Length: 194
Ligand code: GLN
Image (cartoon, rainbow, N blue to C red; front, side):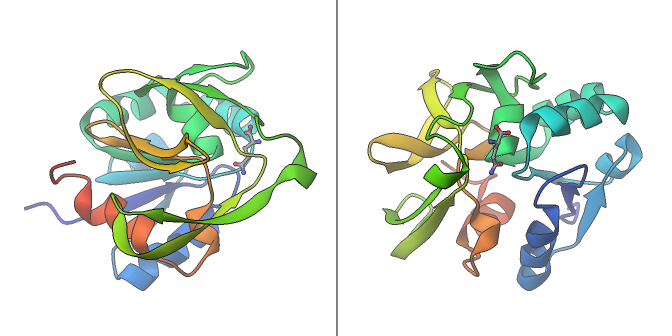
C-alpha cells in the first residue's frame, strides 16, 4: 500500500494552516509549487486565497495540465478559493478553473469582506459528534451541481461541502479552527463509501 502524502498547493493563500493540521494528524505533507512535487502526492489541498491569483500562478508555474491529470486520478480538496478553482463552471471568466467536479460556483456571493461570517452547524455526514464552527471569508456559493456530486453539509439550505468520487469542496475555512474533522475526512475517509 502506498503511504499517504498530502500536498498543499502553496502558490498563494492560506496554505500554512493546512500544513499545521496535517502535522497535527501525523500525516506526511509537503508544499507543492511544481509538477514534480505534485507527483509525489496522494492527496492535494487547494487552499483559500484569491482564485484569480492562484489561477494565474498555476499557469505561470506550468502546473495546469498536471493538476487536471492529478484531479482525475487522485484526491483533491478545494476550500473556498480552492473550491472555485476545481469547479466545472464559475461565474467569473478571469478564473481558469480546472473542471474537476460538476459544480457551478459564484465568487464572492455573500458579499464583500465585511460580509464575512462565522456560524455553527451540525455536519453529520462528516462527523456527527458535535457542531462545527464554520468560517466564511468572501466565500463562494455552490449554485448548482450535477448527478455525480453529493452535498455533505448545508448552511441555510446552501451546500457548503460536496464531493464526487475523488474531489471534495468546501466553501468555508476549516484550517482556521483547531477542529481536525474536515482534514481527517479528506485524508482518511474519501476513499471509503460516500
Ligand atoms: N473571494 C475569494 C475568491 O473569489 C475566495 C475567498 C477565500 O478563499 N476565502 O477567490
